[in-house]
Amino acid sequence: MANSIGFHSEFRKFAVQLINEDMILGVFGPWQVILIVAIVLLLFGGRKIPELMRGLGKGVKEFKDASKGEEESSEEKKAK
Image 1 (spheres, rainbow, N blue to C red):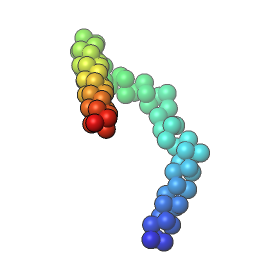
Image 2: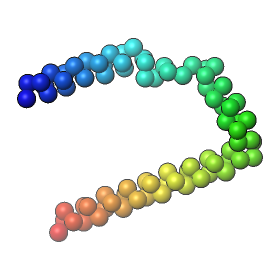
Image 3: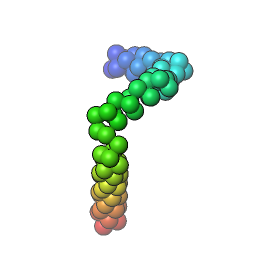
């Protein structure tokens, strides 16, 4: 039990250190983003990207609808 408490506190210290040092948020600089966008444009072309984004948006919407449906059904079960 004491080992797990020590592990959690060490993990918390490590996570706080990562956030404080902006390692999570500062991974990609502007040149890296430009390079990634250029590679995506070369791979898929300008015409295909809107179709990909539309499909991604539909997938996210379906996921949100499904998660809302599960929340509503679990609330109905609790009410019974």
